[in-house]
Image 1 (cartoon, rainbow, N blue to C red):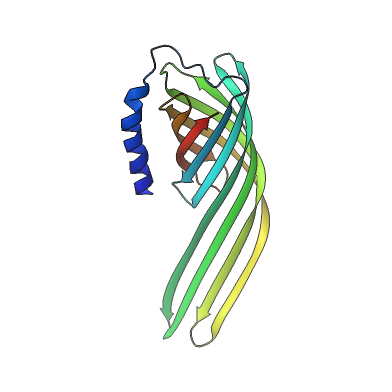
Image 2 (cartoon, rainbow, N blue to C red):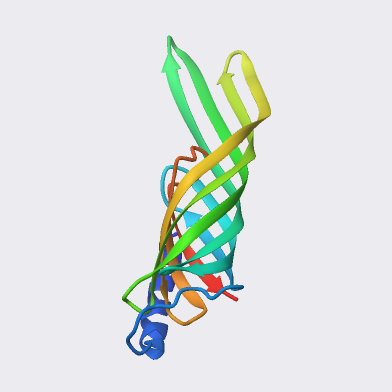
Amino acid sequence: MKKLVLILGVAALLVGPMTVKAGGVYDGPAKGTSIIGARLGLSNIVGANVTYDYALAQVWKGTFTIGGQIGYMWNGHSNTVNWNGESYKHSWNNHYLSFRVRTTYRFNVVVPQWEVYGGVALGGGMDIWSDNERIYSEGFDTRHGTGGFFSGAFILGTTYHFTDAIGLNLEFDFGDWASAWVNLGVQIKL
């Protein structure tokens, strides 16, 4: 993870000065623009997500988009305890797949390379879980299963564009328990 952040930082230093735009207000994505994002989760849960947003219309000082998001998240824990002379090991894992429809409003801001946006996402997903217990004198007790869930969140994000098409993206995902709350990645406009 640290290597990815370092690589993105070095790329920003190398590409950024070559693509500085002349002053003015950032126009935002034009109607019909496709925006693809790929991010890694940096917070409560390990994960990654890919988003696609389509610019529907420019309204007032921004652009409305609609799109979708596919995400994969994982969390788990393992520990061993000695109790009454007996060794006891417990571990659990959760794998989440989520699919959401999202809409955003991307604000035009004074800094030409910077974009700020907010929106909502609704959808659902699947939780594939396992729970393992082992008391060494007795053997394993394993449980596993799957379940579905509803997924909804408020989204706040910002992108710094190195070029007209490529930018470094930071997105906050509030309200979805099966997603990382802080996500860092890249955004590409087509």
